[in-house]
Image (cartoon, rainbow over all chains, first blue to last red; front, side, top):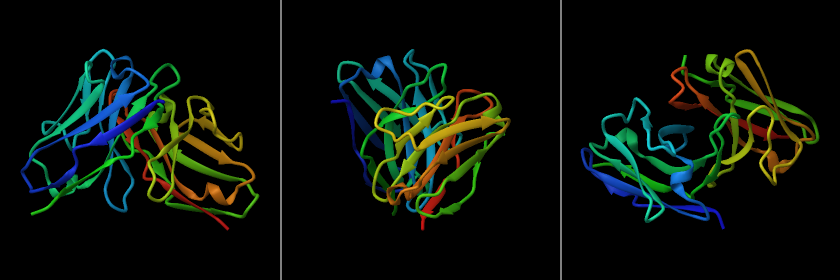
Length: 120
Length: 108
């Protein structure tokens, strides 16, 4: 079965760090684009970061310089290292597979999400 | 522009047709994708590319794009279609993605 399972969320103080994990099964994370999307409580979807199959990475301006996306091929897992966290980073964080191609992006597989709360 | 604009809320009578729109300059260059999200659930892909439905998505869902506007059309709206709908596309740089603000669909 093709699925994604996120973990690593929790309550963290402002300025702290967390590493989110997204374990994939049924496909190889290195063969597809993988992305992180977040959703603050009661708000809409907010794109965070993407890692291409070739390894290139891109970030939303709001997290650039603080967050780092990476992957471990042996563990078939994608990570989001989040440093210098702010209250506005509080959200449900989802990872998703992106079937990027000539027909554009398509996040076809989503995890169940992991909650990050940044509060003193 | 890196923004995608959606109407915050739309309503439709049961069995009728509704169109949800998404506007943004980047849509002239990049295909949109559309996501349905119900309360407490992860988003679900319902449409992408020119008008491609993933396996398992009802053919009541269809899409179109003209100029800077993309549309998601639901024909014969059902109660289970009540949800938030989000469009997504690339921004003008081509490397960043962006979501519209979302449209809350109410089926009356």
